[in-house]
Length: 97
Image 1 (tube, rainbow, N blue to C red):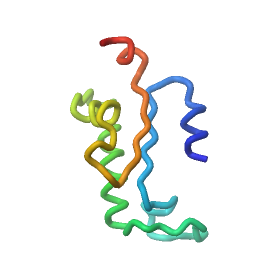
Image 2: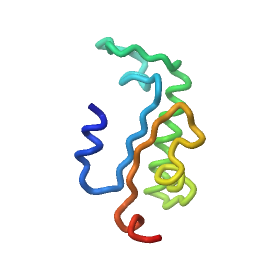
Image 3: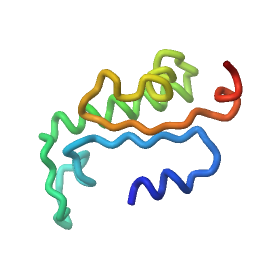
């Protein structure tokens, strides 16, 4: 379902970062109602991974951080085996070499 939401975002920037082994409740203290998809990633790891990628996306866009931008839109999950990254930068960036 999450890929459908990504496809429906018509105006980039957009990023879909899937944390492998996490479920919908990986950032919460409770799994209520219980998610039928049980997490295989422990909660501290899931929280750290979700926080890292959230921070990268926000730093790229709010602070114009080129290192964060490169990570989200160019390198993706090259150095993070816990994630799958699909992203599309803003149109203005894609049109430049």
